[in-house]
Image 1 (tube, rainbow, N blue to C red):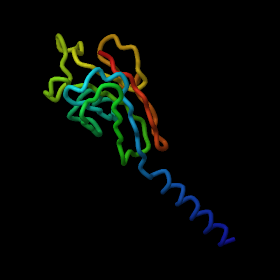
Image 2 (cartoon, helix red, strand yellow):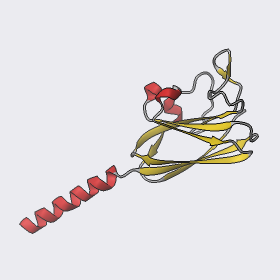
Image 3 (cartoon, rainbow, N blue to C red):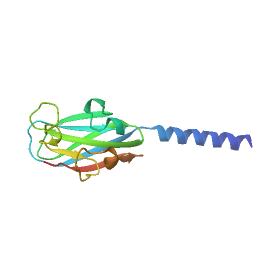
Length: 140
């Protein structure tokens, strides 16, 4: 009986360790219009900080290239996330907007939601339980 209980406890502990392991997340941004500037991919885990670049869970910047740009996040804990990406063509480090709200540079959101007004985390959220790959189209 003690051997069975010990075996069960070891199994439960190993399941917990497997769940705590970090994952990788690959993001393919399609339809990048040109190779000017950089592409930023911002990963968010908190709806309250969504769209606030300085508060993103992780941000990766890569050289823009026409067509598809692939970004890989490593060390992603299992959970719910959303992605906001943009093509910073002029190299100023931010997504330029007309009237403070209409993007004038290319942007992309996970789940590719139809957006009328500021995008919401819930419309772009996805779950990471294992390694994951997303393909997200850019909008210009």
